[in-house]
Image (cartoon, rainbow over all chains, first blue to last red):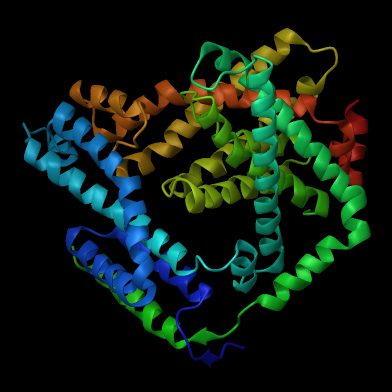
Length: 248
Length: 210
């Protein structure tokens, strides 16, 4: 049963908040997008606070190059907006610019929402964050295993990449040799991972009872209660979503 | 359907999808290679197509979520493309699992199958991705194919058809490489690991086929 407790927004509340706002952003025209942006700004100011600066900077780093690229293509090359193309009109670079501005703003709000939520829970470890979420244990287990294997593969990639550069099959920068031999790197990494996984499944995990302990840890950590913070941000996100859909 | 070894295969293929991105970045290749794990997952579970689809789809979705959180927040919008690739891999590409693992390598059949299924996957991916490219990104995703979109728009095409045509000129090459890599990795995967993924029904079906 869900009960109410004191405190700021929980990971479950933040996940719901993010999903509602991202859905609303995708559906929004310019006025609705402004409503969503106001809620995101309020979340940054009151919930994330000091860490918002870094989250916004990261969002800018991700979106600005794409926006510049869009400007080059739409304003510089095409010179018309999609609506003008559909209408068969002459079109203007101003309309193309407005089209890019709307698309880039949408993308910025989406990215910023994700980055702010990540910044809000940056103090938690991935295992801790996943454990708290109110989703089936099997889904949590899958997510944790994948994260663990990503680390395993990253180490395998680093080792194999260094070894293949040392033996002259690959180079540091872009090269024809990389194009021809990158397959060796992929195969090495895959075989390393398979060997590790087979060993874990057959011997290590059954002996250590790893999966049972993991399931227990993930089930124990689950937060079933909502906080006062959730009850502020979830309705706010929902109201912004309604505005985003209705106001066009 | 989702036994522990299969869950591990899903996680492994999701991690592979995610990590190949790192490899592509390291060796600076001008391609994506972001669905190799999805296709490979369907192949590993052949001949069980239903399980192959479910596992391939989950592995693709997981890698999209991971990529969104850790690297690129725009990729989850291509989830429908991931579903289409998982469906095609499980119900079409996995039918050629025997050919991909045959020893000695049947070079002609292997090459023809990789080309045929790679091109088909590319066409499917291009068509399914186009609405996302048009609606969410306004036709420009930041890859080099955006210039193709611009070229088609300049030649009088509508945005949707320009996005589809651009996708059709870029995706088949990328997806053919992905099918090739998935088939080669499937071929290199030890039989012990594949046996762990099979249920008794799959093993019976495999014995009947041979």
